[in-house]
Amino acid sequence: MGLFNIKCNQAGHICDKSQYDEAKFWEILKLKIHHLYCEVCRKHSKRNATLTQLVKSSKIEILDQQTKEDIQRQFQKELAKHQ
Amino acid sequence: MPKHQLDPNTWIQLYSDYLFNYTISRVNDKEVAKDLVSETFLAALKSMKNFKGEASERTWLTSILKRKVIDHYRKINSKKGKAEVRMALNDNLENDGGDWLEERVADPFDKTAEDKLENSELKDAIFNCLGKLPEKQAEVFKMKTILGYETETICNELDITASNLWVLIHRARTSLASCLEKNWF
Image (cartoon, rainbow over all chains, first blue to last red; front, side, top):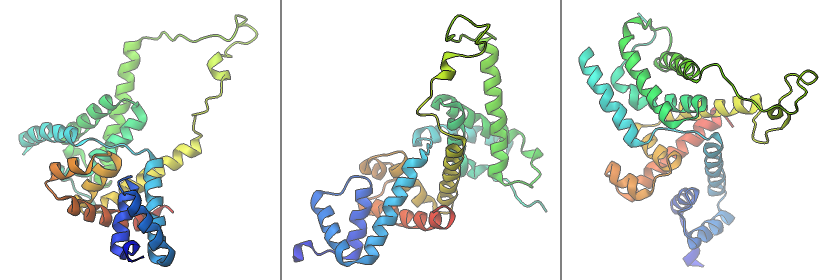
């Protein structure tokens, strides 16, 4: 049973990874077992999953890093003219 | 003393994502949206002297962007000309004038005004909460959660370790969840 015992900080880490489908099967199993006796982590996981759901449902879109850098470069040139 | 002041050095870092998101929901074309955002920053730079300090920087930049979006549609319409091709439901237009096939078919993906409003309010709430995070946390969260980048890509890009990334993600998620709990849930 000790094999499946994890601490709260490990549970939090697995919970975060599972939001991005990066947690392994065994990790998820450990997390589920941890949830059986830890109410704090159970609540945290629920909140974490709600956040994932909210961000997904908002269909928010942002600029990728490369485009942002391109805009920044172009902007800096113009800014230099103004300063 | 004006309530708000402009700091163009921080504009792109702070507002480019918000403005892009605002634009994409109105023009539905990523390339056009990118151009409009870029043009907005340049136009804002030129009209800095007109800023009275009554509105926040974001509101002021958004108002410039709104005009850019309107100009964009004006340009498209003038290029397209006045012709518009529509499919008639039947030939008897005298009896059924104005009754077009496209209007008779219910669009299952069509959102109600209420859905759209709720969605745009949610987006605003998320952006406001993201704006309260430390810069690095917000950046990592956006790259991982919204852009869907691989852990390795983010680590290489930002020169951080994977464990460092997960710590930043954890802190960002915890702060965001509690911020949204106050402002949205």
